[in-house]
Image 1 (cartoon, rainbow, N blue to C red):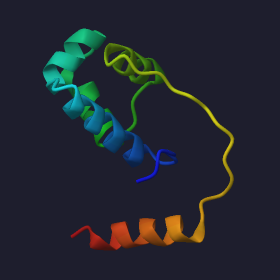
Image 2: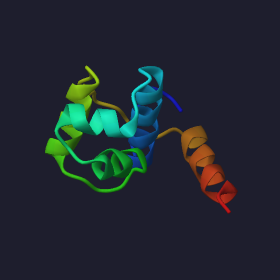
Image 3: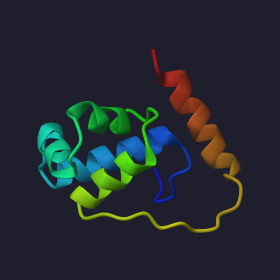
Image 4: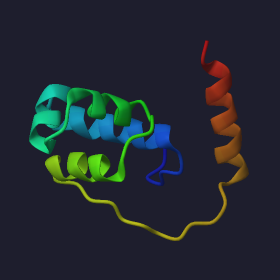
Length: 89
């Protein structure tokens, strides 16, 4: 995955990687963010949640969002994404 996040599951993977890098459990992160553990799980799975929950979890990890203008995904990114979907049993 590149540093550019275009899909919810990519955001979830990035959040999970950051949580692991900081050696924080889901329960601890949820507590720090003032949320329930399910919120962290939903975010890491790329499922829908509120923007306020996302911001609380990011803040609890010392992270922030940065918006940048990007073009369409490259052909390689699209192909890789379809390949990843095909690999799921």
